[in-house]
Length: 248
Image (cartoon, rainbow, N blue to C red; front, side):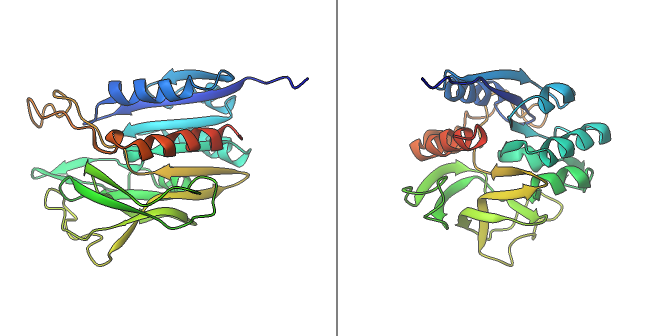
């Protein structure tokens, strides 16, 4: 008889300017589909011991800045074979200059671990997502798909990336200091694998969502946006990412 073992997952949800409550709930629903998964939930990287004891780290964050000690602990987690499923704006650290968003390189080690650094994005739009690797288990059998009202990210690559999904866009990011970044190329990774030590990061940049109060103090009330969360294919990618991280 096969005896199943508990799989410890550490979920960090704390995304400035995003609907953290919605994303957290949806991710917990998906994690609960596997009865072997035991999930610990936090809003920061402070519990380095808890992260180290987990098989999989999942992050849905924006402008969440780990300390140098926490970055070192994340490096140890990956070097020892941990897996990290990073979602949407995990690689985004923001400052504001004369009313525009800036993205200085405030945590180089953090971005090195993630394999990319967010720079800017143009206005929310409909994006056609193209599969670039049809044989990998994370994308096998998935067809190209469309997401609406999504943030199209321009990111600076940091180290090796095995790109699994990409999309084409090149509009300027008028709300950002580096407004022209990324406009010199048409294709941009949307999901990739990034090895680090004995571990690996799976980065999926899709997943924008906002609730009506999430843009304070920049705006008082905004429309509710669910972006890629309205796509069944996005949920399939999340399920496969969880399975990948749990070694299944």
